[in-house]
Length: 240
Image (cartoon, rainbow, N blue to C red; front, side, top):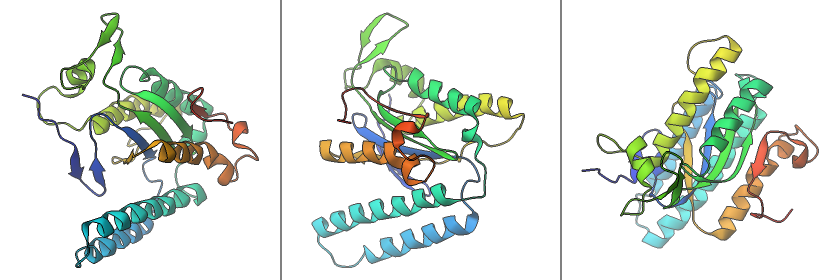
């Protein structure tokens, strides 16, 4: 019997309900120096210790949400501002591999809302839906519990699993192999652990999509986000 898992923790907490909208950040291996990662870890540990004090449940939830937002912005700012470390995604051939892999999974494993490919990381916004097209049978299929049957057969065979982590693992494995060939290199391409965040409502979704689209403009790569080649948003999702 498949065990439906929604929460686990490694260096980062991961909450992955099977029907939700997600904001994902995947970075290249070695894209952040060890001292920066350690500072972020210490900051998170201090916050978690403070959360153990006598506070109401609503207060803890609100502070946790505020901390996650601030924590991620510092994390992303570090990635945007680094002049050192790998920037393999600036290679057009590599970016094209990643772009095609993201789009390939649209309608198969998620409903793609937006993405942006930066020199050393990518942002993706997608929704896990209860019904997806299955090209192997030419029709729409869905599991009784609302989880797509095709996803179960691909991702959830043989024990407990975390659906978003498994989707990203497949995406990262595929793109790493092909990107390393293009770059004539071996070794880790992506950082093992990715950042995932559940988007709670329509307002947050719109803010998140604009955050993703404006990333190259804020980082100073282009004067307008519309000039950045490696980004996408679902037609009709936002007003531009």
